Image (cartoon, rainbow, N blue to C red; front, side):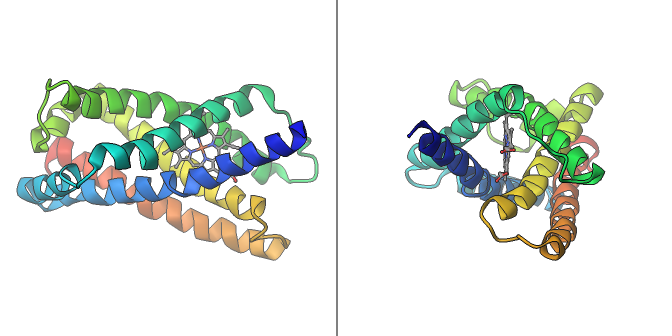
Length: 206
Ligand code: HEM
């Protein structure tokens, strides 16, 4: 019985990493990328998301609760679950370790990012406009903190997509897993580019 429950929680953890958290991550990076087309474009795109009806309800059930569940179980997995990885080669074992390391870095990054944006907005300490991120990223320390945080998150998602495909039985053969490695590498490079390009825009206005 307890095994069934563990199995269910692990499957839910895996699913939530892609739907809805992964989908939200891509949407979030794409909306922010409007900054590259200028202040107005960004403010229009961010304002559209901010003014969606039932926003708090959507945020709670599509973003906060799934991330909270995934993060809490994720920390538990990182510090308690051991695996016998001998049947995988060096590369997959390395990716497996990096998945856990990036999970922790991503957690620290998201907690800070949510604090200085969404919570600060909610408390009325800042306004939602282009200068919010411009001011934050003015500091070289914060710029590099964000670069590391964004790349950690995009890596965690893309590499997680690879293991998600195995977990749910989509990629069973070595050949399909090899193809998935290349596809998820492209996903990683594409979304990292979108995120990093946006950060450079806010920091340097390039
Ligand atoms: C934007 C935020 C995040 C996204 C998009 C995301 C996505 C994913 C995905 C898709 C997986 C693969 C699921 C599978 O193996 O079937 C995964 C696994 C994992 N995530 Fe996350 N995650 C995020 C945040 C976090 C955080 C904050 C932690 C906290 C430590 C975390 C810890 C883990 C761990 C430990 C695994 C591996 C589970 C295992 O090996 O069974 N994740 N994540």
